[in-house]
Image (cartoon, one colour):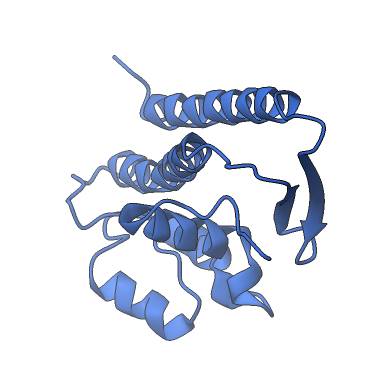
Length: 167
């Protein structure tokens, strides 16, 4: 019988594989550029973003956005699987309402709890989930969880913006 956390580890490993694949593809892409094309990497937004600035007539493959979206989705899904496992660990049957809430305000966290997102988890688990919420920090939108949540939602509706063109 599989361990309740096996699915989480499998998704996390797949995210790591995609990170490695994306790095390889980016490296190969950069090596394929001609001498009049140049791409320069730059950390911005206090290290939250890594921006590649392209010079010349260079189109970045859409596949980069697809792989980035898969990475984000697998990492976000790990959190939902964790709540599922915590519910089972507590001797309760999970429902489709269970998921890991990621909230920028205490009011939204309470709303998510009332919607049954963490129903069935132990009180200890509930306190831990609450403690890592973005709203418990001075800048909720800059937390890893908030960024992960935003990009996961964005990727459901459009390709993630891997490149921005500026003239």
